[in-house]
Length: 315
Image 1: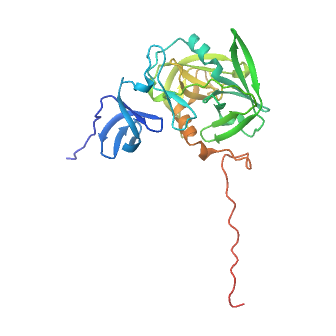
Image 2: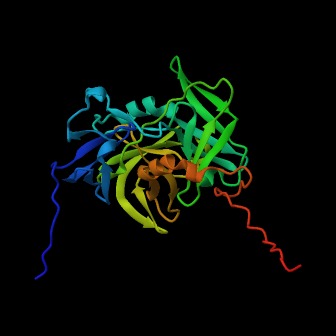
């Protein structure tokens, strides 16, 4: 008879491992070794070096430096890249009406000569996420931001927009607003799609068919819809052309996905890229850096080696 050994979590349902670089990892601790922690993330097992660990927090325990009242505002941690911030999922849920008012300035309309899409800021210095197909083959890009002043919504347009990185296989692009005199922008916080449950309510803000600041609401239909070799969040939230690149929020106001397509043969069949793919893209953005010398591709190609001419010592 074959014997199976099973690793059981040492820290109950999960723990948060705070890293010295400023990030954090959440999962069940399977083993504590002298040189590392063995962390079960659900989809893989991660070894975290001890010299990178700042502290370990049990589920429901708050860090002293980031302690907040979970009834009012979620704890926020800045990633090691300092390009985006993420919440820890302990904030209270709010109504869509309240969240739209709070998040409206984070969502933008992305325009090119060939069309338009949506996007959202991830950093106050003007870094924003949209879909690759929104700006594909385009270099003339503008971004419209909707700012609330004295109870009125004003449109501010920025035309000096640079492509920072792109991954056409995951349909993601990182842009940066570089207009002189541009203010600090309101970034959206990134959540965790893994904490969602099928049936949870989600909503999108975007510009479907050019109708800016449109809000649509639905539920999460499945977290693991496989399409062409990639996994997507499927939602009943209405997604239409122009929504592409916009955020899909949970009821805590966290981005859990990036809307990018729908099934045209039916209704209520929208799809979003999981936010974990966005974090990976941002953390490894140098690998996807846009090459100005090769604008049709996100990859830099090296020059081919030249022919080696060997000298004949007998001549």
